[in-house]
Amino acid sequence: MKNTIFTIIENRPLVPSIFRMKLYGDTSAIHNPGEFVNIRLHGFYLRRPISVCCVDDGVLTLIYKVVGAGTEAMSELSIGDPLELLTGLGNGYDLSASGARPLLIGGGVGVPPLYELARRLTASDRRVSAVLGFNRADEVFYEHHFSALGCDVTVTTVDGSYGVRGYVTDALPDDYTYFYACGPLPMLKAAARSTVTAGELSFEERMGCGFGACMGCTIRTKNGSKRVCKDGPVLHKEEILWDD
Amino acid sequence: MGRLSTTLCGIALDNPVIPASGTFGYGTEFAAFYDINILGSFSFKGTTRRARFGNPTPRIAECTEGMLNSVGLQNPGVERVIADELPRLKQIFHKPVMANVSGFSIEEYAETCAMLDAEEQVGWLEVNVSCPNVHGGGMSFGTDPDAAAAVTRAVKAVTHKPVIVKLSPNVTDIVMIAKAVEDAGADGVSLINTLLGMRIDLRSRRPVLANTVGGFSGPAVFPVAVRMVYEVAGAVSIPVVGMGGVRTAEDVIEMMLAGACAVEVGSQNLVEPTACQRIIETLPEVMDRLGIENLSDIIGGVRHG
Image (cartoon, rainbow over all chains, first blue to last red; front, side, top):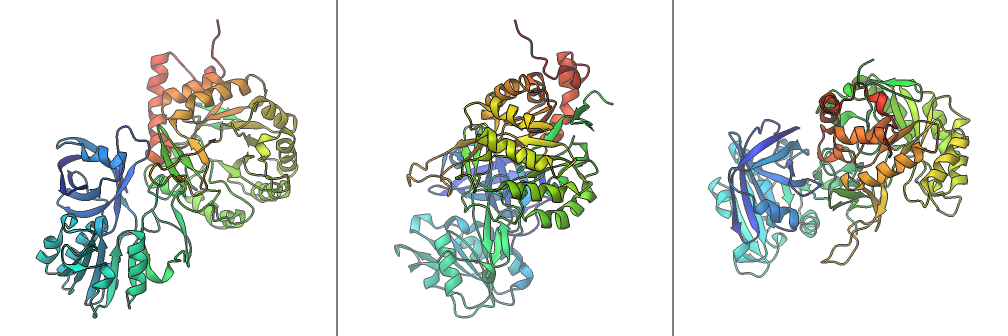
C-alpha cells in the first residue's frame, strides 16, 4: 500500500458516462490485476475506490463510470491536476489458477480490471476467451483492446444492437479451464451459476477506508467474514454465499 | 518528559494522540503506513464477549464533512482477540493499549473486562456504553444514568486497570451521565461517540444504510464534541478524553483547551491513514505559533470574559 500524489495526463469519455483517466506517478505498490486504488477528491469526505485497468511504466489507467457526485467531480478534473491515491489495495486475481484456456467474463464498468489480467494471461501463452457484456451498442468499449491481445472476444448487448443479443451468460464458450468475472452483482450471480469450472469473481461494496481497518464492507462467505476491500475484492466461486 | 506528554489516569503518554476505537482495527493495517509506536496509545476495535458479524452492508454512507457507519460491532470475540490479536499487536506496538469493550448485558461487560484485565498489554479499559441493553428493553446503557452507573460498577469490580467510560452524545444531558459514571467509580470518561444519523438515497428512496440508521462522525461533528467535552470537563473531577471530528493539531489543542487530557482521532484515520502521524509531527510547530510550551499546561485552559 502506498499513499501518493499522481498527475492526471488523460481524462476523457470513452463512451457516454464511462471515462478513462490516465495518471502518472508511483505505481510500485500495484501488483496484481484486480486490485483497486482509493481516490481522495476535494469536497468529498470518503475516498472513491476504482479498479485498476492497467499499469505501464508509471502510467496508471483507470476506467470509471459517472454514477454520482463524486465520480462526476472526477470527470471534471483536468490534465495536469494532482490527485491523491492510495494504491495497492485488495487481493486481485490469482493468475496461477487459470489453466491453459481461461475465460474472462466482464459486464460494463466491470470490464476494465479484466484488461490487465488478459494482458498477463496472454503474455504467458494462455488461450484467453473474453465475453464482454453491455446494455447497448453505444456503451461498448475496449473490445478491440482485448482482441489486439489475441483474446477470442465475444460482445453481448442486452438490446441486441451489437454482437450477441442477451447477457454474457448467453454467450459463454463450451471449452475453458477456469473463469474470472467482474461486473454488476446480478451478472456475477448468473456467471457463477452458468459456469462449469471453478473461478474468481470481483465484488463491490461501499467502503469506509479501503484498507481493512473500518469493517465497513464485510460480507459473509463460506470461509467466514471477509472484508471486501482487504480479503477481496476477488473471491472464489466456491466460497460465495449468494443471498437467495 | 517531552513537550507533548500528558497523563491519562496515572499512565504517562508521550503525546495525547490516540486513534479511536473502530477506526484503527487492532493496529496492523496502520503499521503498514508508519511506526504506530509514535502514538500516545490507541483504542482497539470494540470487543464483545462473543464474536459478532455485525450488520448487513451497506454499512457506510458519506455525508458533508463526515460519514455514517453501521458496522454493528463486528469483532472476533474477546477470546480470539486475546489469542490472536494481542500477540500480533505485541510485535508492532510496545506501549499500553486501550481495550475498548462493548456488551449487551451487565454480565457480558464484566466478563469481557475481567478477561482483558489479565492482559499486561492493556493499559486502560474503555467501556462503550452506547450498545442497546438487551435486558433493559433495548435502550442504550449510555442514555440511562442508572444503567451506565451499573455497568461502571460491574466493570470496576473485576479490574484494577483504569476504567474509562465512553459516553454517547445521543442524550439530553451528557453531564448527568458523566456524573453518574464518576459517582459509580469510573476513572475517566471519553466522549463523544458517534451521533445517530440517517441518509436516504434519492433514486431508490431507501435508506443508504442497510441498518437504516448509523453513527455520524467526521469533521462536521467537531463543534458538538468540543462543547460536550467542555461541559463534562467542567462538571467532573476525573480525566476526560476528547474525541469527535478531530483532524488537525489545532483540533487537538482546541479539545485540550476545552478540558481533554488526551484526544482520540477517529474517522480521519480512514480517509487519511497517516492522519495521526501528521498530527503528532505538526503539533510542535503549532504549539510554537500559539506560544504553548507544554501541552499539559493548557488542559481546560479555555478563558472567559
